[in-house]
Length: 213
Image: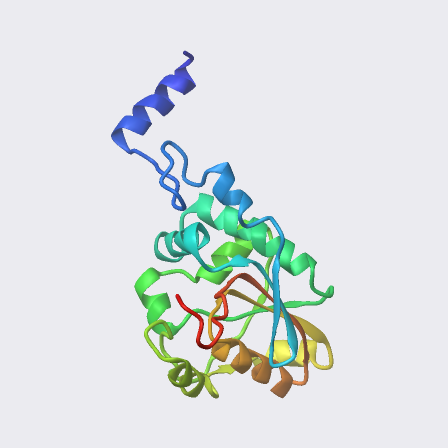
């Protein structure tokens, strides 16, 4: 065993690593979990705007997203970024505009997960700006999410002037109820842009009314 191998073995004992998706040892994101983000994209729409997500927000993908959002791990951000890049490639070629983290989330984490994942994909996007409270959406009902999101986002004036009349692709990490993305669509339209498509890492599966589970 070479010096590099010995150091890696020692590090694995002192600071054990496990896949954030499935718990496989000695790797932050295993190949099978990473592959879940680079398969067939999930397609849909938000009020008529086409949406492409790298995967459904469930199981191991959900665990990878959670690990990235909470710890900002490089391996997780690269894996999620690979999936996001595929979703973006399915959308029309256009400037990217990203949904920002909530102010509370940004204070707590110290970083913006969507920006981190975009960096993992080697991409950059114009950030929308928080102009009102809104707050974290995680614990809210669908109706509460829709109400809380209204009027909370805007495209900064300098970017609005530069992108006026252009089609843009909106980017987020997870699309849940669609409330935040509807507000993002409203914000770019109010700035004189057209929302050509939405690209996301994951989309929460829609439940069929009356279905079990």
